Length: 165
Image (tube, rainbow, N blue to C red):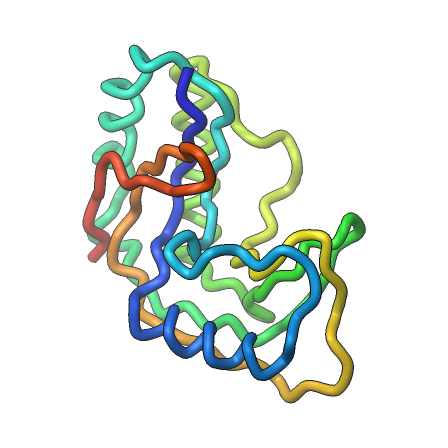
């Protein structure tokens, strides 16, 4: 069984900016390793390895050429349970279309998808809380690829990449 999810990778230059910013904040809790920073589109949970071929066929069924977009994470928040994250105050329509398109395709092929309403976010730390006085975060990049990841022993390994735009 493989633990799988679709996500937008965080570019290395933005990872460096986020790392420098969160070091200044002295965020409590368990920080997400820099190499694992991403914005999840669809969490799939544990699936058999035999599902990989089917999952790799799904992104090309979406209008990927129309779905490249600029993503801006400008809100810091912490959900109940201590998940400290960055989020867009105004999620781009293309981001929401990409997430809903993946959910629709997963349902069509009988694979599980997250039943909760999609809330785009980039996790910074677990078992955390909002730090004291901070300025508004502003991290932006052009989302240009959709990646199928495998989570293995605390690392997120890319298995397949589909270009956007």
